[in-house]
Amino acid sequence: MYFRASNKNQNKMKKTMLAFVVIIFALSMMITSCKKDKSDPVIVPQKDAWAVGQVDSTGYGLLLHSADLGETWERRAGNFEAIKDVNLENLCVLSQDEVWVIGGNQTIIYTTDRGLSWQKSQLPQLAENIEFYGISSADNTNIWVSATNGTMLHTSNKGSSWEIYTLPFAESGMLQGIKAITSQMVISVGGKENNKSIMEGVIAMTKDGGTTWLEVELPDNYNINEWIGVSNFGTENIVIYGSKGHYSFSIDGGNSWKNDSVIVGTGTGAADINCLTMLSENSWWAALDFDHTLFTSDQGKTWTDQGSAGPSNMFLLGIDYYNTQTALIAGSSAGWPPSGKIIKTSDSGNSWELKYYSSTAPISKVSFIN
Image (cartoon, rainbow, N blue to C red):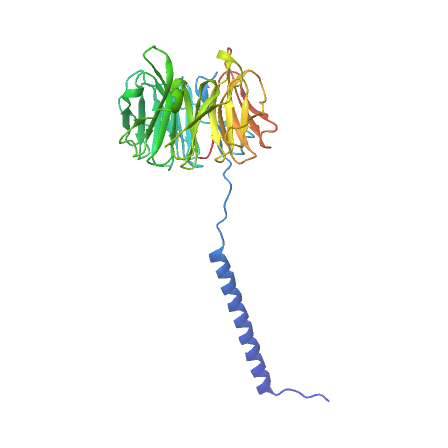
């Protein structure tokens, strides 16, 4: 038997259904809103890499950019007058947009738009024989530059003004490498002439942002070795490295040091450690003379020589890593004619591939984003 609902009951059912739909819609909007508020921002991996080298056949210092982890390279600032006839020595990549480059003739240039345009930083008056070698920043604000004659430059306002430091204990040589560990702690290393006119190592350290500088004496007269650079992992683990495979490392922020070496070759032919980067407190990658790439996973107790790629008999001068699998190395010919290369690994150094070659310009440094 069929019963037809009254108009009154039909209206009541419609109102109930409408209220139910409204409630469901409101709940869905609340859930969606909560998910949106709590979701992490979309992070686009920054795959930029940069490299610098000497003047090539164009007459300008070589400045290269890669947007794909070093697979392909394009020239930047190729007709920028400030780097005409200027060998580019080193660089500091602060972000995807901001890159600082130093070179000969007391040149400092920078970009804030990923290399589309470049500016030359105006510097205070310096002695003519001052040449720049190292550049570093720990906080993307304070930028440090090391140079010859015990000279260092510092800016805290992106080059609007520069402070000059001259260290008496390093005036007879050059500060080749520099590393800002924090905004206050900076270490610079290099070589100076001793009383026998022989170059020996020098280490300068500040822990108060440059107000005071101390000369670091290593145990067992280990400063007899000329130093090239500094690397760190965090604030406690620091490695100083240099000539003939010698290095010294600290696990307590530079309060104490342990000396060691990894010797490749013999006598005067022993390879220098030209650049070293720390993946962790235990794992380090190093670039040396004569196409030697070394890796340690136990703070230097054991080393593996991973070789190289491309033209042989080159000094490997710069190394930087993107992750534990991917790294880039910049190299320079050991003799005439001048040439340079960039090689890459994507398998933790088990194999290397040539990604860029210059037949006229040595390539000195390579870097991912700081």
